[in-house]
Amino acid sequence: MAKSHSPKFLALVEAARSAVSECDAAELKAMMSHENPPVVLDVRERHEFEAGHLVGSIHIGKGVLERDIEKHEIAEDTPVVLYCGGGYRSAIAAKSLQEMGYVNVYSLWGGWRGIQSEGLPIE
View 1 (cartoon, rainbow, N blue to C red):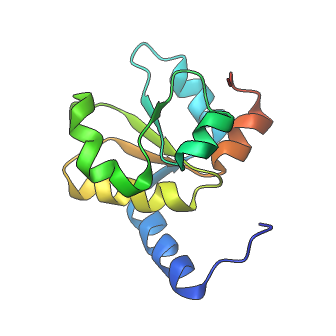
View 2: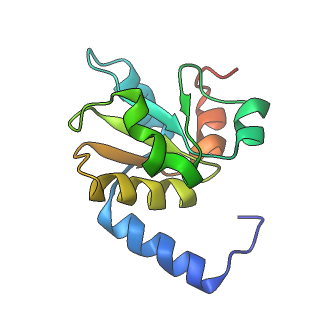
């Protein structure tokens, strides 16, 4: 990854990754074709979302996710996939949703970059 992240942040991410389910962009593509596709949450900053995002994704920034998730009336057993730029912030966010009682949550490893490289529909 081009950016270097601080050791404490990376430790937090690794702890979250070990506690949550992950998928990659190819798996997300397959999930999106299911009869019951996942709700996809973009947890990046607003300016990142506005610059481009997965078609149909809902923007809830990581900083307000816990506060705002229930405004979207997503059932606790609904499949939910979270993505950010690469999979770091989304792992932390997914762990937080699990702690709130959501039981079918995935963090998209590879994030926005994976979405683009897989050719998923973006706007």
